Image 1 (cartoon, rainbow over the protein chains, first blue to last red):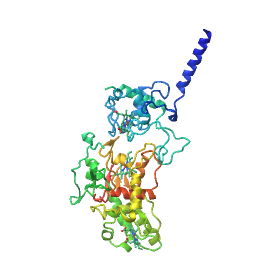
Image 2: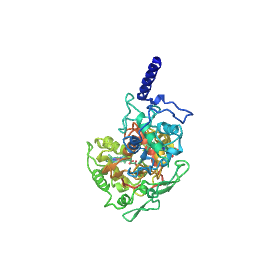
Image 3: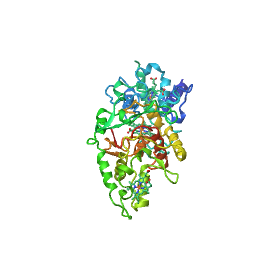
Image 4: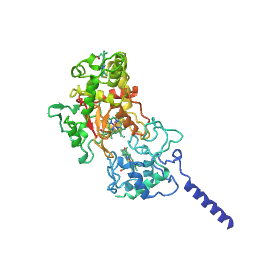
Length: 159
Length: 272
């Protein structure tokens, strides 16, 4: 009995630990090459924060290429990609996470950028300065948390 | 590519005519061909993709803000500079005659087999012939001069040479055009060929032609050179850009110019 309680406590600590340990871009686990079933943060994202990611220039700027009818206040939505209305019904959560992390798995030659990848680029720059990226500080376009928040928001788009 | 699939509002008016001061008609649609632009249905000037207001500014030289640069360039043409005590005009005479057609052929391979842009020719005359200092690639003097020189070819069809000694440069430029640079991994073609007519945020994508250059950009309130525009587009892919005047940008300039063969030189265009 006592032993069980201790084991339970240890298990709880380990769980809490994984909740903080984000999955790094290189460690993302793909299933069938297009799905990522596991949360990158170990926890569900926040859909409200996801709205900011998709609509802000400084974050995901998804609206540069996609329209969201549900966000009429966001000005200048592009149409390079399909409108994302109803996208939460078209794809599973694991597929959507895969598309946001690296859309080239699902759509090989797509114009959509890879938001959670850090290698394989030609002349990567230091953000929008035009200068070369510093390999020591170069990171993915979005953080694990931003990916999960975006996903949480897209899952609400069911029609 | 889903051409013109965007909202009706975003569709360019492909039937609009570019006529300057009610007199000079400029070709804004030219036939495509299978060698240079196999993926384009037709070649379109960037002018067709702009709003009615911006298009109107280019149709009237009194309204066209680039004309101030053209005037400054005309003044520089006759200004003596450098140790040889000469002006451009002393050697070239009336620019209307001597420089007619020059812009339509730029960039082209020089006597030594090197591909040069207009800026290189101008600076070569300054440093080698006039004993004057080179101008900065996108500095005020240079952009004024290239604006003035471009105007002398206004309305003439772009006619760059892409074979013979120009061929390896052209190949290099084509290679670059299809390279997906930067962290966003977007090539020139991804935006200007695959997405022509579509909206990227507030911008209406054209074919990225340079027949209108140099251009007066309202956003910059000044003249923008071809290489400056290239630098901005590559920077926007979160990439390390190339330098203005670099071998890479001159090769890219030749390739992009060739994609607009047949379009009229706009002299100095107006863009948002």
